[in-house]
Image (cartoon, rainbow, N blue to C red; front, side):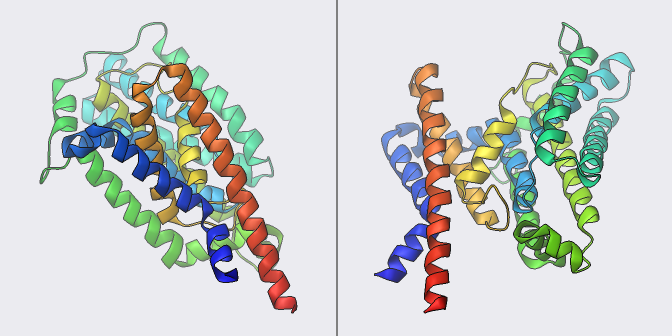
Amino acid sequence: MRWLQLLLAQHASWLTAASIVIATVALVPAFANPSYWAALSQQFFPAAVLALALTPIILTGGIDLSIGSVTVFCSVVVGALWHDLGWPIGWAIVGGILAGLAVGLFNGVLVTVGIWPLVATLATRELFRGLAQTLSGDNPVTRFPPALREFWRTRWLGLPPSLWTFALLLVLTYLVVHHTWLGRMIFALGDNEEAARFAGLPVRRVKLSLYAWSGLMAGVCGAAIVMRYGAAKADAEKSLELTAIACVVLGGVRITGGSGHVAGTLLGIVTIVVLLAGLNYATSTWRETLTGTLLIAVAVANEAGQRWAEQRSALEKAN
C-alpha cells in the first residue's frame, strides 16, 4: 500500500487532470466531433505554445509573466511594419518574431544581472503592453491580406497548421528538456542554483537562452494571432500568460523548479483546453470562478503531494 500512496502523491496532478478531461469529454457532445478538436487547436494555439516555452523556465525556478504581453506586442509590431512602414507581409511577420526574440533577450539580461524573474517580467509585462498600445493607438490594424487567414484555415493531411506546429515544438521541447545536456542543466538549476554555479555550470547562459526562446515563441504566437483574427490590437489576449502558466502547473511542474515533465505540460494543456471549452456552456462568471477554484485546488494538492512523497522517501532512506 505504501508504494500506491507514494505513486498517488507523486502524480496527484496528473490523475486530477486526466479525470477532468475524461469527465468533460463525456459530458459535452461536441468533443465527439474531430473537427471540434481541430478548431480548439487553432483557438488555444498561443496558450499551448507559450506553456511549452514556460516549462523549462519554471523548471529552473524562474517565471515569465511578460510572455502574454510580448505576444500581443509582437502582433502589433507585425501590423505596424506592414501597415505603417509598408513592409511585405512576410517580412513583417519575420520582423514581429524577431521583436519577440529581442524582448526575450532583454528579459534574460534582467534576470541574469540579479533581478528576480517575478519582478523583472512583471515590469516588462506592463512595459510591452504599454508599448503595444502606443504603437497601435486607439485603432487596431485590420484588413491584413486574406491569404493569411486562408493559410490558417488550411488542412495538411486533415490537420490545421497550428496542430502541426505545436506537435513539432512539443517534440523539440521534450528532446531538449529530457535528452540533452541543456535539459540536465535546467533540472540542476531548479534543484539548487548555487550548487550548479559552484559546479561550474553556465548558469547565466542557460537562463539567457531560455528567456530568449520564450520571447521567440511569443513572437511566433503573435504572428499566429494576426493570422487567426486578421487584426492586431493591443487589448487582445489579456490573460494569455496566466492560462499558459496554469497549463504548466496543472501538469505537475513544480512552480519552485527542479521537478516536472513535458508530458505533464501536455496533459495540462489538454485539460485547460477541454475545461475552458466545456465551460463555454456556463456563464462567464461561473466559468472564471470554477477555473480559478480548480487551479488553486490542483496547485495546493500538487505541492502537498510532492512534499509528502519527499518526506516518505527521506524516512524510508533513514530506516
